[in-house]
Each structure stands twice: as C-alpha cells, then as structure tokens.
Length: 390
Ligand SMILES: *Cc1c(COP(=O)(O)O)cnc(C)c1O
Image 1: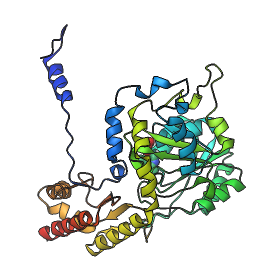
Image 2 (image 1 turned 60 degrees about the vertical axis):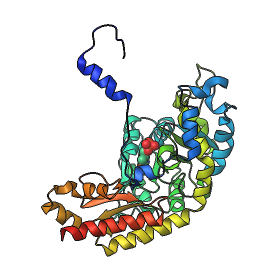
Image 3 (image 1 turned 180 degrees about the vertical axis):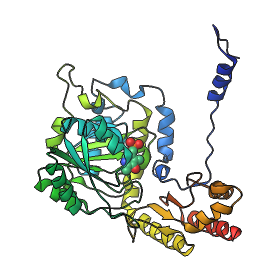
C-alpha cells in the first residue's frame, strides 16, 4: 500500500500501479534487424544489474569519464576501441545519431553543405538539420538494387559547388538500414579526399557485427551503435576520429577544465557502458565469424525466393539485414480476414516476431546470430502461411 500525500487522481494511481510491473512480450524467434545485434550476452546482463544504479561508474572519476580506471573505462576507450575500429581516438556517445551530430557540429559551420547517400538513415538528416547544414544526396539506382555508386559522390560534390555550397563533410551509411547494401568505402574516401573533404562512416549496422578498420578504408570519422550492433543496453554508441579531426571534435571547454564540449562533459554514465564492456570480448569474437553470417543470410534469401518472396538490394547479399518484397503476401492481405495484420498474427502464432505489424508487401528482417534450425522454422512458417491462404 502506497501512502500518498496530497491530491492525486484515481487515474494517476492506476498509472503508478501499471508502471510498477512491466513485462516484455517477445516471441522465441525475433527477426527484427534493430534488435538482433543488441541482445545482451550473459556477462552484459549481469553487468546491467551490478551497475544499474544511476551514476554507478562515477565513484573514481577525476573529472573525465573516459579516464576512469576502475571500472577500466580508460583502457576500453583509449586502447581497446581504437584498435577495434582502426582509428586514433574514440569516445562513447549515446548512439550513432549523437555521434554523427557531434562530428557535424564540430567540423562543419552552419550553412555548410554535406553530401550523403540517399539510403541514409533519417537520423543523419536530422543531425545535419540540427547542425544547420544543407544536404546534397547521392541518388541510388532505385528498385530493385538501390545501389549507391562511389562516383555519385563526385557528382554530388560538384552539384553542391554549383549551388555555391561550402562542402565540409561526406557521409556514407555502411551498410544502409533499409536494404543492407554495402558500398565500396575506399573508392568513396579517395574521391572525398581528392576534394579535401572528410568522410564520416555511419557504421550503425557494421560496428560490432562485421570486421571494419577505418584506417584501411581511408575513413576519417566513424560512428557505431552499441544497442544496435554491440550487444549493449543503450542508449550507447561509439565515435572515432583520426587525430586531425579528433582535435576539433573532442576539443576541451575553454571554461571548464578537462570537459569535452561536444560530449557535454560526459555521456553514458552508468550501466549502458558497462554492458558494452562486458560484451566486448564476445563482440570481438563474433566479428571474426562474420563470413558465416553472410553465408547464412544468402542461404535464407535464396529459400525465401523459392517461396516467391524476393530479396531487394545487393545480390548476392553481403549483410544479415535484408529487405524483401512479397507480392503473394500482399495479395493474401487483400482477402485475409485479419487484413494486412494477418502476417504478424500468423507468424506470432508460430513463435516468430520482428516484422512490423501490418507490413506484407515489403519488409525487412535479419538472420543475425540465429541458428539454422530457427531459420528453418521461419521458412516453414512462411511456407505454411502462404499455403493456408491459397
Ligand atoms: C539504427 C540506425 C541509426 C540510429 O542509431 P542510434 O544508435 O539509435 O542513434 C543510424 N543509422 C543507421 C543506418 C541505423 O540503422
């Protein structure tokens, strides 16, 4: 029994009770691309409980979060992550979007232009908008492959120049979050560097899943998403930069000693960071078996094709995030009793979730870290569902 002082509505009382016991409803097999790479390791789940109190990491902080030695954040941020990403300097952010914004805000001036692939995530666009930047997009080839060509970067930069734009950054989404397409980074970075423009790679779906070394690809700034691809409880991300750009992005305040302005002093000051650290050994290991994940995704896409559900984007595919088009499921939705929600319900009945409720004609899913027997069950489910309506 809670004793409340002062007036409080019955409705509020009901709300308080509702908030106190929150349960999560997920099916056994979750295909949601957003969630597959963010599932915690057992070690991270333990860290979440151990470090769950607010500001739990701040006991031994001397004023700079990334320099905390116990827990070993300094080693993680200044030694392990730079080696993992192949870049000089790394900091922790609240996510990929916060990393992109910090870099844009630090490096570009308001009214400058950036060039960016048209498959970019909406958060790239918002980050640019918040930083007061204009965007020239590199168009994709459109249906069905949605390819972005490195040469498109030169053309986009030229178009921005024609509009008297001051182009101060290029952004490549690697892979993009819609089709899971992979663009040749090296070719893009060479073009950008010919124009004297830094390349920022948005690796929200790459870092923590696939091997990637920024230095080897000529990438100047790199962002990753912890809750998407690094088995972390978010919000958390990583932001890396070469020495040249790190000086600007991670500059210290002129008023407050040792506080980095773009990070507002410190970022993830608790459990989220400890989950990323606790998962890191498993993440390093899983990245090394990336080729198996790609093989599995290709096998799965092939089998979906046999059911009349067609993969869009790169073929052969190079990532676990896949976008499918299904005219047959769309046709069913037009006559099914439950309408377009039939697919969600019928999959849920078979212990499968992760395709957005209401989608039938096109949807994305991910096979990341799912076993072959689970994937076999998914294929059987699609087959059964299609057959049951025809
Ligand atoms: C999910 C996603 C983001 C956003 O990541 P956050 O860490 O949540 O900010 C950005 N870009 C791409 C390509 C994504 O898929």
